[in-house]
Length: 413
Ligand SMILES: Cc1ncc(COP(=O)(O)O)c(C=O)c1O
Image (tube, rainbow, N blue to C red; front, side, top):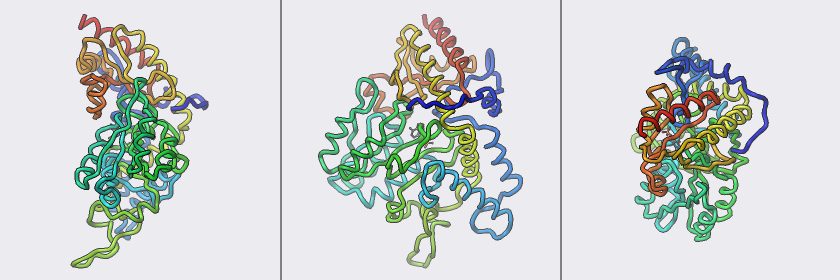
């Protein structure tokens, strides 16, 4: 992420809004360095969801009584918050279960109508499985080819390989993560969109690791589809978002069939509801959507630029301190622009062992393939350890991690 200047964040006050951070495990307070997997939930989100269950709970859209109208207002209000946050209109914001479902929606609905035998779908070698597997399924079904943009030795996308693929003239869709969860790489999405559009391809962006940290305007980016997931942006689980350009969504057939997504149902045929409800079959997780709306309003009130400036400063300190650890290799870009997840390996020590020893003292990091198995093979490692910085993290958290890594090295000496 590009460095920004912004007023300083009162991080102690921010951290106090996360009840879970008061827990003590091992030798002290919890150090949560795994926001890239799931961010913790601040008080305003808990309060909003609790409020709906206690005061306004009723199924949305169908009720004429006050509870249902209040729930509907909370749900559609959350959609307006998300639309505003992304610079989109409300018809273009579809609530899904998570970003995985958002990507699958595009693969099933847009993909099966628009991708044909002999076409190509282009993704990248640093994608999460959720931006690979739906395209494998689509390509296998329609007889298209799935190709990958390369990752260079500096853990950044090789844009020459993107250009070579686009020059073939058969690429229908480029699927790219805005920020890599496994490497921390920030991809030049606006540039990729320009090149893809010039070659006649559309672009889907997986924004799961970008939205919690940075200002994203989907129209400025030019993205055709942009997805993200609620639980990484301080919202609840079970809710995600797909933005799609209105003309594309209008043209796409429904993804799932059932209640809510129809205009009229007859014995042998049905017609579809207007956008965005055409893509929201069944009872949507309206409480979770309201929680997501509360999370975004909370982040927005903190000031996303201030959040990013703080997180990048802590990330820079993290990278600096990790480089002091003997035998440690950072698997991702060392310099800005980058995201706030930092992957690393320790020579001779399995990442799971590293994470387990850290966990004894309440330091939570993630170890594994980070749902990026092909990338791990490409890098020649079975797994990495990953520390990721969220809005509540401080240099003191980084120091606890570094002390813990010294203990890991002592245990395995
Ligand atoms: C870049 C990226 N894409 C997609 C996902 C999948 O998110 P979800 O499981 O919420 O759909 C993740 C989660 O780790 C991610 O980091």
